[in-house]
Length: 182
Image (cartoon, rainbow, N blue to C red):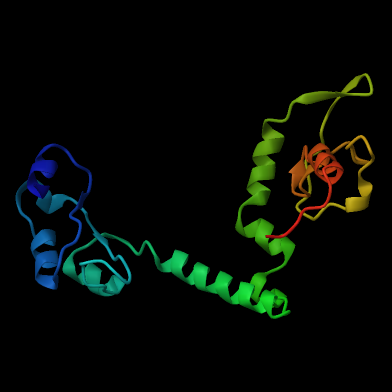
């Protein structure tokens, strides 16, 4: 089947659930049109049929691409469980483990989002005149800067404290009353 996909013009080949190193090697050494195509391995940690190998061994077998689909998810879940257990026990995670608010914004791409947002900003009327919102900063906004109308002193509203457009959301959320934790 892999050879048929290669003959049909596939850019990469992948066979799921190869059960041994021998099957993996047989796959990477296919001839014909398949010989020149990169092969992918899927290392389904903790439950797949394919033997879990480190990247250097997979490269040695002839694989050019590898996925470890559960590694990040698994360690993330365990970290969240530890943090939740700590919170339940009355301990707040150390900032060295969780990162600062700015660290988290940087990790998830807020600066790039703000650049794109500024690129596509449109003029919005303000008190009868038109103005373009100033590009937001990557620092956490001062929660005391919003007026009751939802605009900040710089005419740059913030959504949930993260970026332009949010003060109306924050005002509506505050008007709805306090949130309760489940």
